[in-house]
Image (tube, rainbow over all chains, first blue to last red; front, side, top):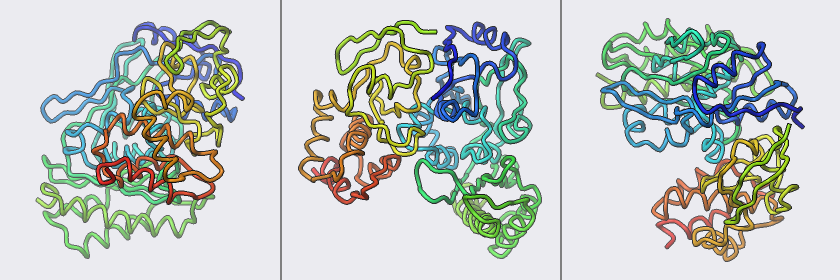
Length: 284
Length: 157
């Protein structure tokens, strides 16, 4: 059972920031959708003195400004995946969102919560990296923006300063993209390996990332540059995927062996690159 | 610390007093409201047995703090048959014999009722089955459940 804490649901952003700033680190836990927080509260892995709900904040939003998509941090994932424009312009993002939990879980789970928790096996972080997503933060000293790559420090550890909240996540441009994963059970399970691949229409460059490996999902910069040619040949894609699988720091755990994970990295990367290359703007 | 919170349960106003801040919606439903149709399976968001509707939207009650749904309209398996979609799901499950031990059934019915409210009956069977992936039947009685689902989708009617 969860220990006794005080539940607070501030009525405004300012009130939430003020509330958050009053606690010592670890004393206040932020609740966006709460699907992960409730789980760690039950297991006793977190014992905050206060739980700060974001339910009254005006951040359940989804906005397009030209090519830029901004997703409010407390928008339920289910709303994101059901938006036809997002599905059309960011296919990999929607594939990743659908890999999170099941539908009832995604009715509460949020992009901001997933990113803020920074779980090593997050199904959303790899695709955020491949889409060069940026995270908008607000706090006692105002607003700032970080790339997701800089925001993530390690497992369960982010660059959020004391009193800061994630306001939104921004995607700079629509990209042909794909997200592939392997796990024991399709829903409500954790990926043994997941890969995200995207190709930028503006610079022609590839973005590859791998998740499911502690401490955090990573961009694969060397294979990305290997693929830079206009239309990489199948052998070049195969070789880049194999090289990525060999070079990553991968360990065994109860979900999968090291050998199996390396095999998955190579196989899923090759497939995902193929999918993106075959899409209308991906082959260029 | 505890305080009162307004809640509508199966269409009736049902304000609750002295709900501890850490109480889960699942425990409120089963132990405070005495509605034992909602089941506790894994208590960690892996099985879907505790699925209820919050403002018409399927939700895992085991991962939801009761205070988080203050002021909402809650529908449980005891009340879902009061509206046409829920009744249709219950009847489809009964006709298909879509249960074995029955423990997962309320969660499946609530998840499917929520899906049909969201998507309507135009949704293809395959997509509905995909979207039910969060619900586990430990008897593995999925074929009859899939039959029930197919009678509720576009192709089945």
